[in-house]
Length: 371
Image (tube, rainbow, N blue to C red; front, top):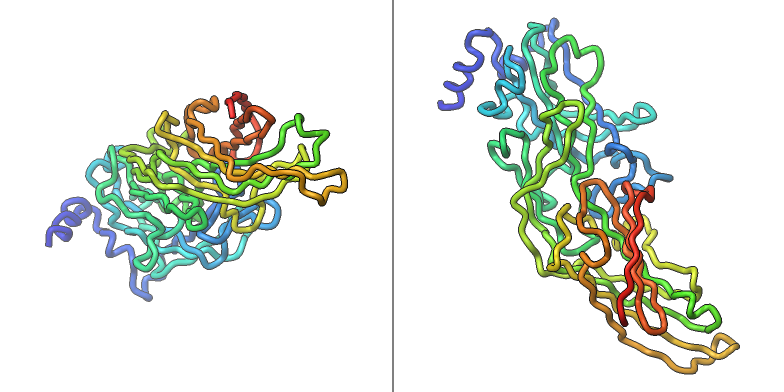
């Protein structure tokens, strides 16, 4: 009863409520809504679910058959800015939309049911937004919807990073499409998706000090602890032309995040997982990198005779633990890739930290640490 009363108050004068915008089959004057998505802003690379990773060469879009959640707000003749503080998703409330085949260089079509239609009045407005992947009852991927949004921005999500790196997903939020009307029905509503998380990669290699040695480096594992693993996120659309992912209310985790095993026989050989699942790439919440954030690597060294097969001696179970904020990168930002390369020397370990826009290198940092 309360919802019906609210609907009447907001839309009673217009003659068209959100419910009436789903017409009968006889109402042929309605224009159906269609939707597409673009890949994440500035890149086509995204881990789409727990076992699917877009590497930029073989896959360009989210996997066919996967789903987004879409919200739509019918604001009558008010603008989104005027209505957003009190409006609820009265037109579409976490509507599941499935990814269909590609329709062009950048676009992917979406299917949904039931079909929704544009108001006949050109002055009536609807605002759209979405997220990926869809948080179904069966598997919410660590996502929950925050009722009412945050700071008058809607939708807002609470997200928890999975401890197992193979289960971590690339949480995406779309730009807000505000104040769309019937005049926009000449083309699909295009949801432009944005990475909300930071991508963390760790490599390990031998230093030039070993260039005359027959040595094998085995990276046993690496772990990160003391970083935020839970937070609330929304799309700040104050400026519709320059929307930004915003995080707040984050909390710490003390869990470990990933492990790998790798053998390097060359000083130019640096480990980075390149399998399709990218289980060793961490997708973590953007944050200031404080002294709580610690990275720990474990590795073995084996030295061989000139025949490269006779083992002379070995050093096993070596570990080094470093505060991440000492590596020169003090903040992880949404949609950025941070690569930490440990260079194992005779008496010290050097860490090279780079920041890229998901893939393209932009900044370098170097620090030395005693072994």
